[in-house]
Image 1: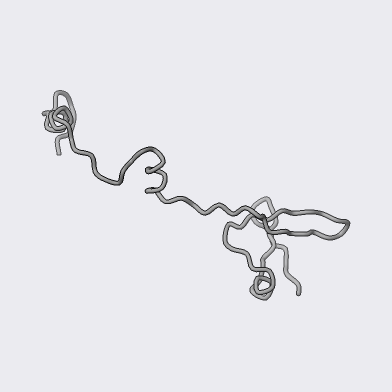
Image 2 (image 1 turned 90 degrees about the horizontal axis):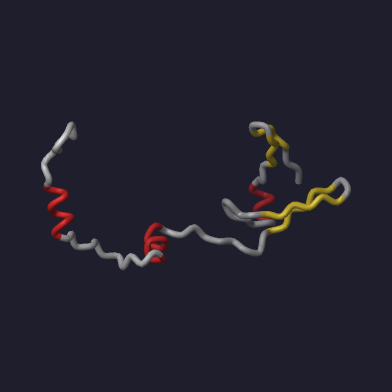
Length: 90
């Protein structure tokens, strides 16, 4: 199998075609280690692939229980305050 090197901005990129992916399956954003041995470039799959966290997972790490918090009396007063300067009222 062969592939072509193409210019990509100031870098160069190698297109990994479907026949190559059928023999060496990788996923989008997969990290690969690259080694140079003489006139060979060797790509190896990274052992650690971390999936992206959802917003809910990040919020849970910060103690959010998934419920909308109740507004305090102070919050309600602040939200209902009339403009005192050049603020635009909704």
